[in-house]
Length: 253
Image 1 (cartoon, rainbow, N blue to C red):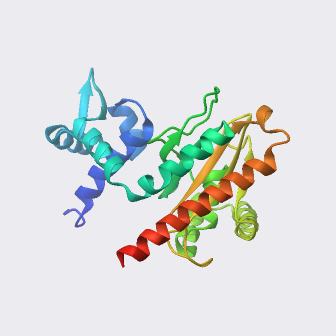
Image 2: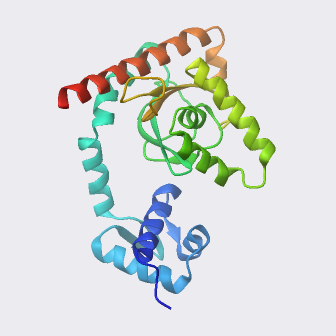
């Protein structure tokens, strides 16, 4: 039986995405479990990726290779979103003394594009280049609330298959987030970590979908009495980044 057109490319991308999301080297057995591909098919994809330098092997375990690193470096240098946001989130991190991340939605995951770490110790899931499920926490809910409605509905259909009550509860929460313009979470992803997230828009208008969100994260023990100030600072930073993106867009038109 012939493959569906494009199926080979989809498999290659699935292997690369699985390695990138995992965050450490994986065995063939782990990759089979993650991708659902047959072992023989997986070996063919890995051989091709190794030949092109996208995957490296060490003692039977596989990780992104040197060409993947070159892509990451080129992304950092060429990403307009990161360039437009970095200065603002650095200032927010410095003024608040807390960690600030720039996040986007990729399929059913939150991906961290940039992270400015606090000088204080903080244990949380977000690191630059890492991904977490697009389901819980301030970052995930901010991205869901302000993305394209059709895209949001498709993601919720996948995440809440067979759980209509859970889906309805999150939809109601997302509506409130859109009204407020931000979202706060407490220990939803990482125990003891408080977060506030606000959307970034490349186009003016409340009906335009967001392109990203920024999230300020801090231990709950350092937040008491500062909640309102941290929320205001995060929202103000998101608005400043949005204005810059919109100005740049107008200048390029």
